[in-house]
Every structure is written in C-alpha cells, then in structure tokens.
Length: 324
Ligand SMILES: Cc1cc2nc3c(=O)[nH]c(=O)nc-3n(C[C@H](O)[C@H](O)[C@H](O)COP(=O)(O)O)c2cc1C
Image 1 (cartoon, rainbow, N blue to C red):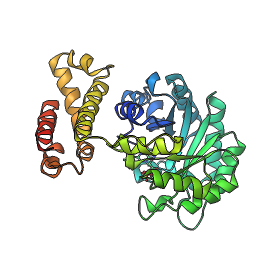
Image 2: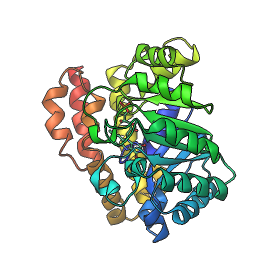
Image 3: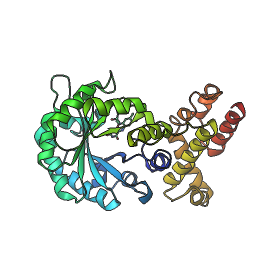
Image 4: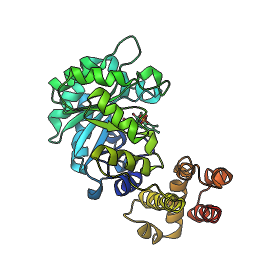
C-alpha cells in the first residue's frame, strides 16, 4: 500500500503478525528508469522480512523488465505487477488498472517481466475496468500462458475505487478460470472474513490491506486463523502506544536512510531533525489509528494528527497511558 507498506511498517507487521508474504508499496518503473532515488529506496529489503514481493507499475514492457531486474537485485522473492490501481495519476499514464482495458499490452508487459527475472512473477488485478466487462478471467489466462505464477484479485472494478462491497463471487469465478494460485482480496478485516473468503471461493490465499494499517494485531489474528495457530492475545493500550512509537522511530531511520533509530539519532542534529519531521508528518494519518478506541484517544486525536516531533508524540502517548 502506497505510503503505508514501507520497510518500517513491514518490520512491525513481520514481528507481530508473521504473515506468509508481504509486498512493498508500488514502485514506479518510469521513476526508476529516470533514476529517482526516493523511489529506489522503496525497494530496500531487509532479509528478516522475507519472503517479500516488490510491486512495480508501468506501461512500457522494456522499462518494466528493467525495473523488475533491479527489484530482483534488491532481494525481491517475487516481482508483482500492479494492474489494480485506479487513481487517475496512475491510470492516465496507461499503468495500473488502465491495463485492464488493453489486454495485449498487459500480456506483453507480463511476458517481458517474466523473461527478465528468475524469481516468480505475479500480477494484481481488479475484476475489470467497469461493470460492462469482467475482464480478469481472460487476462489471467493470458498471464498464466506467458508465465505468471500467481494472481491476486481485488474483487472490485476499477471504476468503483473503494465504493461498495468487494464481490467475492468474482474470486470464485476467477478461481475456476485458471490453474495458478489465486489470492482473494477486498474487505477482509477479521479471521472470520478470511476463512469465509477461502471457503466460499476456493482461493489459495488472502490479502489484507486497510485492516492492517496501524493494526498489525488484526493481521496477526487473521494469519493465525489461516495457519491454524491459536488466536493471539489482543494488544494492551501500552502495546498499541509502544508500537506507534516504534513505528515512528523506525520511520525516522528510514527517512534518514540508516539502519536503526540510534544510528539516525547519532546523525548531525539538523539532518536528524529533517528526517524526524518528514517521518512524523508522513505518519500523521496512521498514528491516531493505533489508539482508536482506547480511553482518551478522541481527546488526543487532533494533536496526533498535527504533531511533527518524536518528543511531541511521546508526550501525547504518556497522557494516554495515564488515562488508560
Ligand atoms: C492507502 C492505500 C494504498 C494502496 N496502495 C496500493 C499499492 O501500492 N498497490 C496495490 O496493489 N494496492 C494498493 N492498495 C489497494 C490494497 O492493496 C487493496 O487491494 C485494497 O485496499 C482492498 O483490500 P482491503 O479491503 O483489504 O483494504 C492501496 C490501498 C490503500 C488504502
């Protein structure tokens, strides 16, 4: 998830939830082609978080192949091609879900990426561009034909954005159209949702998006249910708060381009402050979600969504711990 599933998020998700597989934010092949360092950093992989898929998007088969090779060199266990993003800034370049309208180009992209790398290539699609055509089965068969090894279906049409409910019947239909593994996605929030999606559709795996934002414990419950492990204990207020702070610290290290928070803290003060400011600002929308529902959360929500230093965040969290 863009601006969410970066290395900081993934480290925490891995430790708390042990998911079977995680994916990076989507990475623009065109930006990589033009040498954008910020985009290149999105492909940083920590060996401890593997298995990891690096997701790429673009509309040019050669440039996608070049980016896939770089993703493989960065340590991707698989390269995933995004054909699900519906937002105009992506679709107007012919990338993301716009490819659902151009099956020949979509197939050429998958074929070029498969040829470029040794690791498995997977594709994330939506059901189709709009309700007029459930395009995924035809596309999926084409992708399977040129060597894609797994597919994920976000069971909505691109035109829907996030409107309405995901239609899991489409997952079942797509399952019957292909022989490679299919991952179902859309509106899975609880273990019961995940088990029902698997049972109703026969898909081989479940992808969780929004429910995992600032809530690695939801992911942990779902992962445990699927793996047949006992349900993990729910987090305490202190767990939530400490994890929010850990997330902020890890994000600062990421922004400073060093391996740990202590390494970031050891940087010259102005360099540290710049990284801190960027990191905390980038988490403003996510921090309040960590403590949603805790006593006193609504009082500090506003302060959390405007804070810009770690000290401020710690101070707000202290207030909450006193209230808890
Ligand atoms: C903030 C945000 C960013 C997202 N970024 C990506 C992305 O980079 N690549 C991708 O394949 N899907 C992305 N998605 C879509 C999710 O992966 C997922 O398909 C969608 O949210 C439906 O699943 P859910 O109901 O579990 O959230 C994003 C979703 C959100 C909310």
